[in-house]
Image (cartoon, rainbow, N blue to C red):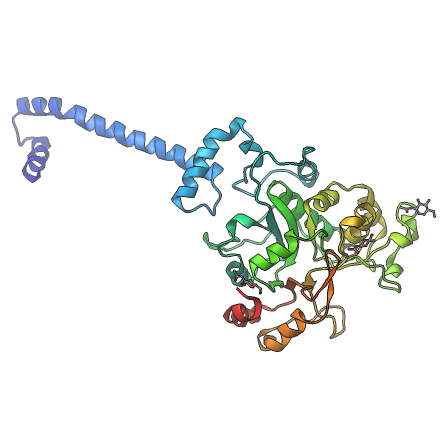
Length: 389
Ligand SMILES: *[C@@H]1O[C@H](CO)[C@@H](O)[C@H](O)[C@H]1NC(C)=O
Ligand SMILES: *[C@@H]1O[C@H](CO)[C@@H](O)[C@H](O)[C@H]1NC(C)=O
Ligand SMILES: *[C@@H]1O[C@H](CO)[C@@H](O)[C@H](O)[C@H]1NC(C)=O
């Protein structure tokens, strides 16, 4: 090989060989070079198409080759199959405004039985300002369960996330708008999360979480608890006094009476039917927007009241998210590094009993808040002792 290459190179150097031989040699070698060029061009074009289809059709998580290959196959086949209706979109970005998004998200099949294998997923929806400092704990919790969950994040529109490609949170930001506590914009953000999650037909249960929330059980326990429950878990109680019924505005009458008025924490778990109820609503929405303004905190009343009126038979009327109000004041307690110990989780996990499918149980809470970023290391270190993962 070496000598031949050398001679070819030297033949091409001008002046080294007689003119006649140059013509002879280039006649002999030109087609070879042309062939090489075409080959390179062909590979380049194929690669471009491949990466185009990959970015169009393959989710960011599908980093391993077999998954990517099957997604590409799906992508080529699916333009006129049922796959085109049920495929998980690769990107959560879209150009729809809320009105268009909510309309699209409100589609409900009228035939109840799915004509394909559907593994119902839990949509974990994070309503945050910006970073998710407890993300490593969630990643540990989610590990290996990729077929059973989806993640959605609503943060301030200005926030630029910095998740690694390998993270469960990578590329899971939905188009967001500014949301203020206690205002309708907060409910709008929650509806936006629900609507985006509804676009994926495999999402069956929708859980609203904050950046200060942690899971209290392993994934299997949480999945079974939620999927086997006949009821959805949203706090909805009739509270007398100034912070409950006191926030009702008589101008909502007669569409909403004081006996319909409910209160509950905003951190809910609801099924697909209730999620569609929330996204499609304009009737109660306008009442709450007009007549529930601070000191009426709309995120504590709108969904509990509306769902109690529309689908009371689907509600457990309690939340799955534990929180500590015992310290008093307008905000619940936040737990930091030094608060993380056996005692705390004993209190949370064995603090009382509740109803589950009309039976008494002492497993009442699957999530807890609020946890400070400094708590992360302790939580990670002892997660198997505390939570079983
Ligand atoms: C999950 O937790 C439950 C109860 O705490 C335990 O029985 C089960 O073995 C755990 N599962 C896994 C996969 O760790
Ligand atoms: C509210 O009460 C009025 C009578 O006081 C009744 O006509 C109306 O149907 C009630 N509305 C609801 C939603 O229950
Ligand atoms: C929740 O409350 C509604 C009334 O608002 C009631 O109809 C329903 O039965 C309650 N759910 C459970 C599980 O008790």
